[in-house]
Length: 177
Image (cartoon, rainbow, N blue to C red; front, side, top):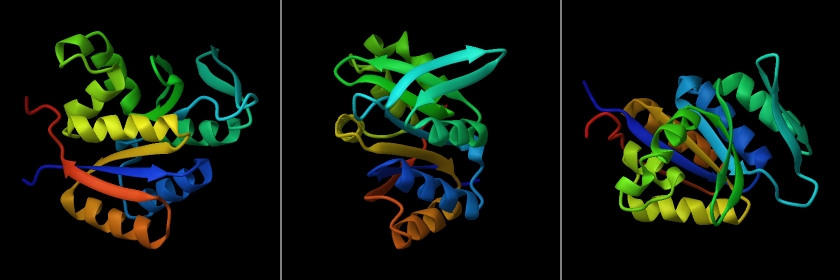
């Protein structure tokens, strides 16, 4: 059985990220294997609050609609404070990966939790660092796990739809270490 691939798309903003997510959904990606990450703010008025009430994760601010749709579709929600970047909002499976690696980040070459989670999936350390730089530049990082066939189709369709600035993939190393 072929190993899954890790697809990473760098999106200029939430609208482009939504377009990329729609392309992944259209080509049959399991939405529980998709994540999106971006800074909690890109201006002084972006996100003004994240909280859980009655088991429902809620965000307030300019990007609330994007995050509410993303969390509903991708299934997980998180807010992480990453040194050097600040607060990051995360939707999808990366929430668990970041939480799991945050306590072990020091053991993986001193990587920050986000880089450690990326590295654990098979994303090279230097590329994970580049994605942190994209986040610092107020871009969205979309990460998806899928079969080589689905990944190839999604990569082509995302590029043709201009739903990302760049799309790169690697073999998924999760669980193989």
